[in-house]
Length: 195
Image (cartoon, rainbow, N blue to C red):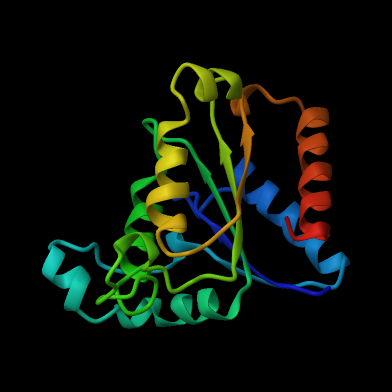
């Protein structure tokens, strides 16, 4: 079954090619090769303001620059987020992007009786791909993947998106070309399966 996939390539540096770009491209190539429709958004290429108040998040308009991003999310039935772990979390630019697009009325019902069932983006699955300098096992066991769990539960899950699957690419700075290619082959497989 053909799916509509949106890849959010969340590396904040759009002036150089990083591992996140390579993995996102491999996923997209695998997905397109299997007949899926793929769109990619790079928040680093969009000039948008950061939210500065709860009032603005709840009642302010989505910046014009991000209306197309909301449309792409609404159109997709599978989301892929790719980003590097920075200071234990996603880069601020990606977090700011998600805060702007995941607003009440779009991602969350503003008047839901039960906030745990307020998500408006149900029927979508997601894959989160995180690159990091430390070994992935250290992030999972010692740090308990805290920021990744927060993204899964407090943003994607809260908006109704699920299941959310993850891929952690540890030791990113020390990967040999052969290991990068193995990761790319894995991403192409995931893209072909839209998982």
